[in-house]
Image 1 (cartoon, rainbow, N blue to C red):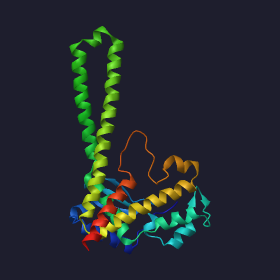
Image 2 (cartoon, rainbow, N blue to C red; image 1 turned 120 degrees about the vertical axis):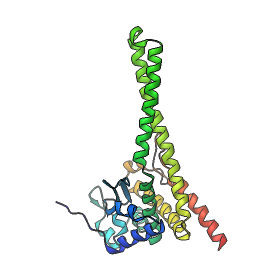
Image 3 (cartoon, rainbow, N blue to C red; image 1 turned 180 degrees about the vertical axis):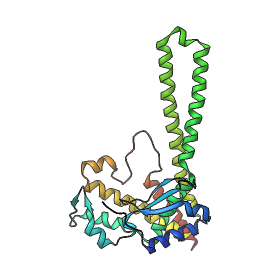
Image 4 (cartoon, one colour; image 1 turned 30 degrees about the horizontal axis):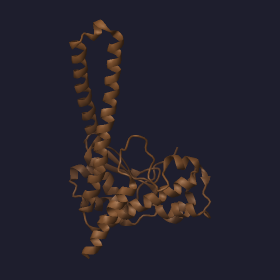
Length: 258
């Protein structure tokens, strides 16, 4: 049975510094539990509910050296051919500065604070209540239950589909704008986070382009040639390229001031 890899003092201290920068109260700090997560993305789940709390997953590239990653990395359980240029690009993109790591950690903590699970649940309940009331009002007004069973069922199906589309549309819209707000809030923390954000998104795009090449056909289905994730109809998050451009502009403005 595999055991969880404990986080070292260095990364624990880095998380504490991020919480200091975000000026989190002790109540919030105590419900966020960091742990080692599989993969190369910072992960979060849960809410600020004191009973269940939230978890903050720290990926291996935040705690391992490039040499350790080079030794242990595999793609689909096959050792990587490090003579390939895309493999080298992938490894280089996994190596983040302290500022970029702090930015990534802070970004996920802001996501936890937004408590999206609660918000999405409220939106779902509100959508169901409104549509159910409207549906019953129409069915009662035109006596559809008694007159036409087929029309009654069609109306029910139509409201169900409309409700699902509405819920997905609203939650995606809010998630998209939460991304923008979080990036703006992190910029307000100062130059370190602006530089960290620019590096983080730039290396995310490089990593995705390299993964697209290394994974072959599967990679082309997941990532675009520029490094964004492929989307179909739904746009839940701001594309990485747009977020990188946002921090490029903020960094240019910062350099002009200095």
